[in-house]
Image (cartoon, rainbow, N blue to C red; front, side, top):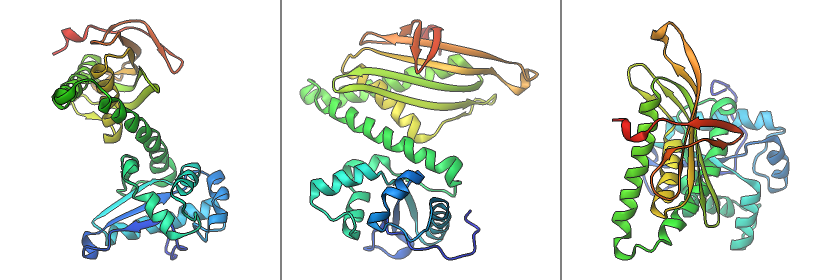
Length: 286
């Protein structure tokens, strides 16, 4: 879509830091992620596009142009209900550019921003934007839980230790699983509601693990919060185990672990309608 030669109709969901030379500026835009949201946003005149498909074409051209002109290009989901609430809270006119600028760069929502590196919008980047909003809300919940802990002056080191433990648990799950294509799920029962994280993982024969950075950050944050606050939780890894070097032989697998507030131990678990048998011992994985 970025090769479309026509000039895009203007989008009014953008903001940039004009204090620096243009080549060093950060370009930030909000993207409507569904036709329904596009229709609901018509009253605010966010775009001159006539329909959602045209809007996506215009957005692709806008992003391609921004990558040629700006050092950093970022985007986040322009969530209609969130924006309306934001304007109500701050007494802003949703049809005004100032409201959009403040919404896009609102500090508590920075975790929802994703770098744009030329991905296709419909099949790749837009679904990631939707997940990034959900992940951002979860990360905010995690921050509140960590800030509300009882560690006092020692809270910082304890949080770092919990994060390291969570990252190490996740690493051991992936190493123990071996080569394959997997989906990882974890959930922690926390005050204020359940924390959830999900990640798609490709583990190649050469040992390289492919996972989106934002998914990795969320998984580690959820595991960290559970360990730090000693909350019950569960983790599940399922998918196809195998590698091309093994004559293309793959087998379906589903392993799970459970925590009562400390470490994670093998247990039969069901998450997101996926049932898994007790996983391997994480202590046996180097």
